[in-house]
Length: 87
Image (cartoon, rainbow, N blue to C red; front, side):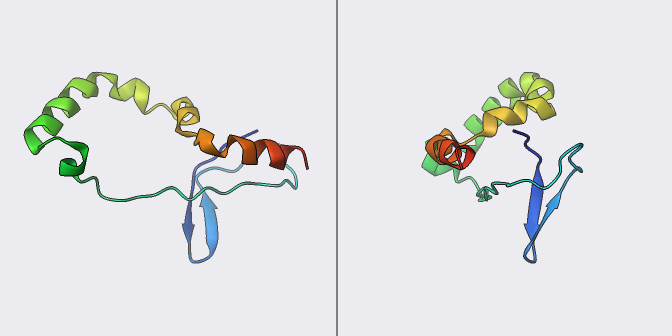
């Protein structure tokens, strides 16, 4: 299985890179939510958020590496993926 990031716009998915050595293939497209984070709903204020951001910034370089995208998988879909692979 290969994961490539992309953007959906005007009825098309635009990939950030071209998959290498992949012919015709079934794909799954997952639409990620992009919404504003409301701090109050998270139980923190702006000062606490800034402090948290500062503490986590030491991990930013590792966190933002492309291979870390594997941890963005929504495991609630795992049964769906298994069913798809068994087709």
